[in-house]
Length: 332
Image (cartoon, rainbow, N blue to C red):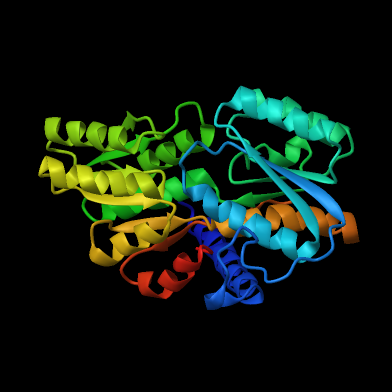
């Protein structure tokens, strides 16, 4: 990776991390209420409506942090926040159209498949509805007419993961993809492959909506190929599945992952997972809603015509204890 680019990425991540801590402090910090309000003790008078449409799959706990951040911003801003989701890109596009039909003040959307979803986003923009994008679709967001994008560069994150695994001696990396057809997941594994240098990187597609199947599929792969010495998953819950698979297969492979949750932080602390790369989903959800409120209220645009980086940042043994309290609050 270009060192100047990497330093800029880390600087942006540090700013985003600082913003998360400030936002958490504003909503109660370590004493945050973990109700659906996202920790806000009181809600402002509702002045506008924002609909969020994501590609969340059933049971994927990553999105709990997205919603927590979005709901905290909505409570602060006086926004009537509505959430809807479908992992099928065609159905997600239909949900965006349904949101347009409601004529809200803004729409916040993820875009894991621009070919299927892009036209719906353009229709929202053409209807005069401000659109923020986050988490997936960063390469296409501003071209589709979004007023802002909040997330991490998946290819850069993958490069960093591949380089870290290779630096720890990995020779054969298994990159586990939990949902086929999502461009950001493929970009992560593409980045891992490039970042790993001469190490072999192999992809394994699993059904991320069935944790027991994820575990058994990874276990079968590790049992069949003892040369695999590193498993990289693309979501926290799948890293926990991979940890079980490694143990059951009698493998010595290390496990690293994208994204976090409270259980994953504990797994880093006990050593069953080596690292996680954090894109700060709470911050993504918060900024996606707050960005619309700022635009509608003040004419502000966050990022000034550029994507806003919320990650990546590594969490490992060196800093996991400092992050643990925020993870327990659902803000990291």
